[in-house]
Length: 234
Image (cartoon, rainbow, N blue to C red; front, side, top):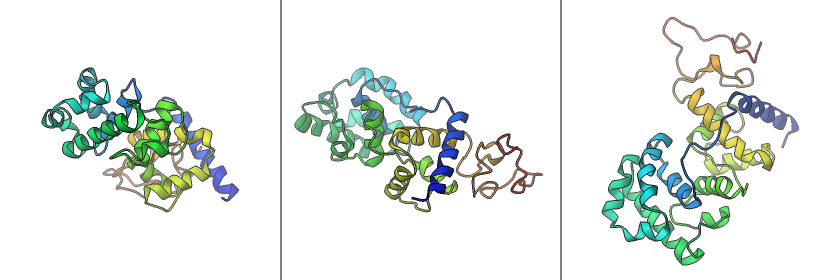
């Protein structure tokens, strides 16, 4: 990996970490099982919506066997607001059955073991392993991390697994969790999918996509490169 690429990547992360000092997982959870379930529910949903559902769900379901004891239709109805409730119900029940059968009722602690659970991919495994167990074995690549990694010129890939591998090469293991948290926060707050707020971005002078994505507001023209009002570029 080119040292200059690493220096630039580090500068981007340093600035964004300073800009979003509160960056951390937004899902509400208190046990590894709760985090696993919440992360499964977060697919194609918002963390706010998931937290509304789990506020009730986690009071009722505290162990893997609880999710298996309830009728499938009842569980589907409870998680329906998060979308794709049939697939998510199957994934949650499959995970709980596997946890009971293979792991003595305890959520496995490593990414390698987590991805073997039904319905658990690299992103979910990375979220659970790093946040619940402090096992920094990967970088969770969600829609925000995927979008920002490409916009910021950190990678040209669009496949989440390839993006993860590049990010793991660019950053030391000690920062892998921070990479995901910070990019997600920046994606939610500033670098939106359709209308990124480049004029407010802390790294617009380092971003090859700055002022090139989306349309300017009516009556405004996008600033030329090098003429950004960002305090970082001044």
